[in-house]
Image (cartoon, rainbow, N blue to C red):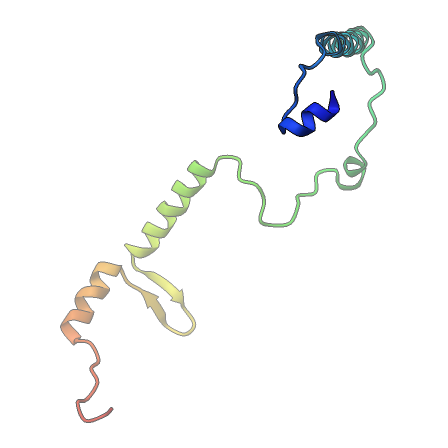
Length: 128
């Protein structure tokens, strides 16, 4: 038979159906055993919960100590709105930046008007 296959260049007989059936049956039995084992483990764990929980080793160290910055934001949308409100208040009001040095801030709209009135610095044509 093997010589016929070599002469023709392809397999001349079919695969044995019995071997395929035994392989499929073995796989089905193995899958059923795995299913029963996993189901049994889950049922055991359902009725025998873990009674002793180990304390976290990190809980003993810190008590109420906060971690270093940056920390996770609890409500980032609210916090970003508060930040934008604070920035807008700084950009739209008068106030001291450094009172000792006599440095003040002015609203950004007023600063733009003053800059337009005074003009912008330009480069002289001869300097290149």
